[in-house]
Amino acid sequence: MRNHQQRKEVRERLATEEGSKRYRQRKIDVEPVFGQIKHNRAFKRFGLRGLSKNTTDWGLICAAHNLLKWAANKESEQKLG
Image 1 (cartoon, one colour):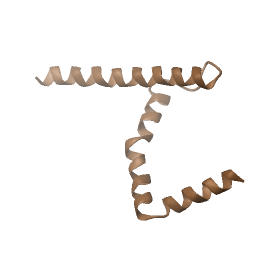
Image 2 (cartoon, helix red, strand yellow; image 1 turned 90 degrees about the vertical axis):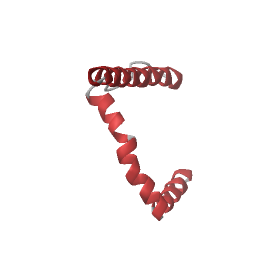
Image 3 (cartoon, one colour; image 1 turned 60 degrees about the vertical axis):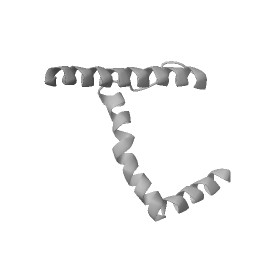
Image 4 (cartoon, helix red, strand yellow; image 1 turned 135 degrees about the vertical axis):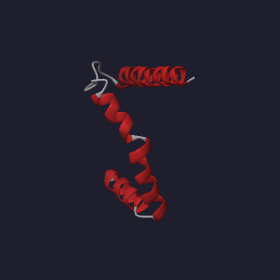
C-alpha cells in the first residue's frame, strides 16, 4: 500500500515542469557514470552480502572511478601545459 502512495507522489512530482526538467538533467549528470562503471570498469555485481558491506564496496568503486578520472585529467593537462 505504501509503495503505491510513493509511486503516485513521484509521478505527480515528475508531471510538473520542474520535475520534468530535473529528470531530463539526470540523464546527463548521473546515468553515464553508472554505465561507465558497469561497462568500462567491468563491474557487474557485488561480491559480498549485506548493506554495510555493499555500501563500502560501492564507495571503493566510486573512489577508484573518480581517481582514474582525476589522473586522466592531470595527464591531459600536462600534455597541454
